[in-house]
Length: 355
Image (cartoon, helix red, strand yellow):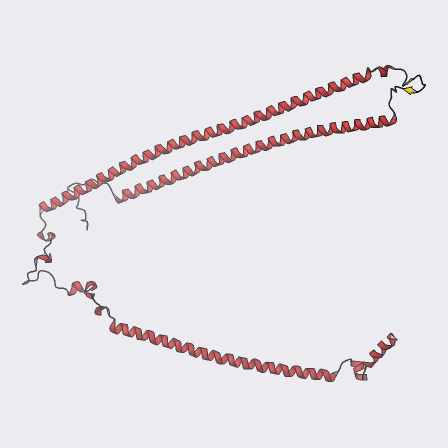
């Protein structure tokens, strides 16, 4: 029944021969195409309207921006015209104090027919004329002034040299102290390493002595056990057992099978314990050797780091000393250029007067 119902449903979907061949509803498809075309036209019309609105808003913004720029240009023009018309520098208060044409427009001193006041200070020392005595006096003052400068410079150089000598002496003393401290530190470090090595050697000797004594005791115990076993009275008997008055066997020289198995198990446990103990001692020796190697490596690394730090310190000190010497040479050369040494004589030309 289910198969028949499925076949009936399948056949009912075949409405017409055309649909049976094609498998689609052409009218429904045409309606869908028309609807999609109308929707596309609506979307295109909506996009066109939005584009027109955006263009209109852009024109409005452009016109508003142009108006604002025009107002700003007009305001700037008005400010500039007002400044040029009403804010000239000649119209400011106290302009005469900074007038560059004041000396040209001012009245010259000592005009014929005009007697200045005593406070005008229009009579200067240079107007008295040039006489030989005054010239000689000026020359003498200049020579004295130059000699005083030379003496001052020489004194300053002596002070600088004394200061440099004191600094060099202190630096040499500090270097010697630092070298002594470094040597003392190296000696202490070497003494600590040697003391550690001696302690390790003493520990190894003690351990070796303990192992040797233990081995000797173990060998002596084995020999004693073998002697006791071989010299026991039962080992010299001819028969393995004796027969009592009742006719039963007694005093077995050899043990039973169960006792023999138990003895073998005990011996196996003893041998295994001995091997484990020997293995543990070997491992302990290996650990001691590893610890000794690690301590030696740490000591070598610390010594290398210490030497590198001392080398870096010496290099930094040498660089600082070279920089100080270079700076001092540069300073001395600059002072020699500024203060050139010379001996003044009456026949030398006069130096230019100082302002």
